Length: 413
Ligand code: CUA
Image (cartoon, rainbow, N blue to C red; front, side):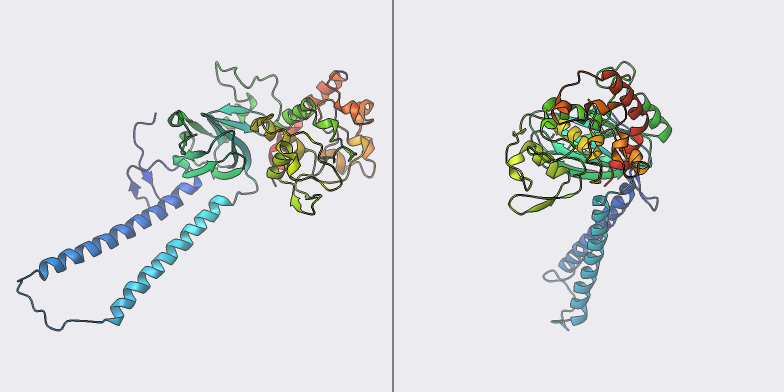
């Protein structure tokens, strides 16, 4: 626990006691606005209070002061006390609106972390596959985007030292971002009453120098004596986890690399406009894909029937996140819906962006060692029985190259 109460230093060097320390790029600006609001409130309260007292005492019954020349109307006075507060209010409004917009506008180079709130813990997923509970490790000086959803009731993700707080809702993604400025450990809270152990639902955000963060990542988020979640030998990226779920849940039975009778291909649908049977359209963002996994009947893609089973209650939000990461990793172009862009046994797309750029007009050329299982959809749907040696080597390759492309390339929209 941080028992020595840190003093907040705001931009002009004024220290405001009792405020949490400032550990993100927002903190200084938000504190400055807060301080100005506070100062204005104090000033006008004092002014009005002083005038009331002054007049009460000066003009109390029987006091010996002149009551001649009573002023009934003073336009200049009334204009002054209308116009000055009006402008002060507008300035505060514009200032606050600007800060609000800044907090909502996630920089495009932000590193994305998925947050799942559930009674009564925070579960965090990094796109490179590292998972954490009630702890979040981030590097200093890099924007971090949190994409959040709740597994049950409403929670609220609150890090006072960063001055960020955003509700975490069941069934809907919310986002918030921050950029940490000081290495250290910062308290994370749930700020929405969510049941019996609400007050215990919290943890720590660890802000690290980029070097240390790199080290932490390379050890797969391992801490001494902690072998619970991330074993250094077998970490899969989020999209690799998704690929496995894609196979095990049976998505691949119907959603093959190419459209077929049972279902549309999920290749290159992320971020694309989808047309539904009832004529509506929607961009296939993460909210749409989540809905289409959990409640596929809500929006039926034009040309298909409502035959997909409902996965609501079958999949956790973690699994949905992994599936979305996988679907996102299937590329953003429509191009290689060719047998050659088939999934390998782990459902991993064999052709990558890198391959596409130099393969010219022959997408089939990227087939590589896995050309054996390119025919038909049912063979891809079969569980990982053969080719496990190939898969191992492919995964090995992928692990070497994909964390970069995952975090910087495909995870940014
Ligand atoms: Cu979760 Cu309060």
